[in-house]
Length: 136
Image (cartoon, rainbow, N blue to C red; front, side, top):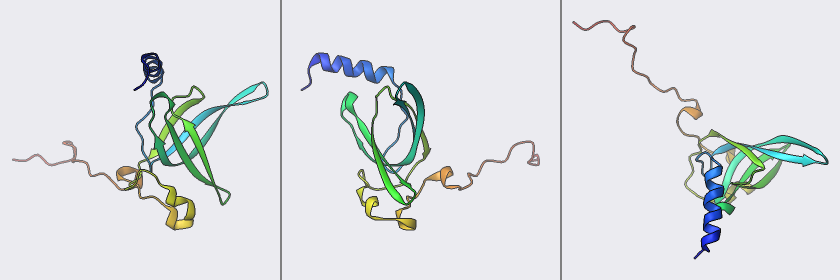
């Protein structure tokens, strides 16, 4: 059971920061603030979410990408003020909550299936009334 004060602080932190819904297998681009000496800049890290750890205000998620043939993983705190924005690029279709098996795969075998429109499938739309002949 958490302390009431900790619960109050966590609720305040979660309320101040709005994050998109994503899960393991999704491709995300994380914009985070990097401080180098006296300068600040926003750096992006794009890759697959291989895990989420839900623990209130201290929730984290792990993103994995391949950079110049080498796998790079980074753990981000979900509600940290240094994480400026999270963009969900594609929704992945996976059956697991932890995708650690991707670490030993490479090339085409390391791909994750994507769902719906993000995969490039055309969505059938009903014809517009202007283009259909009037029914008599």
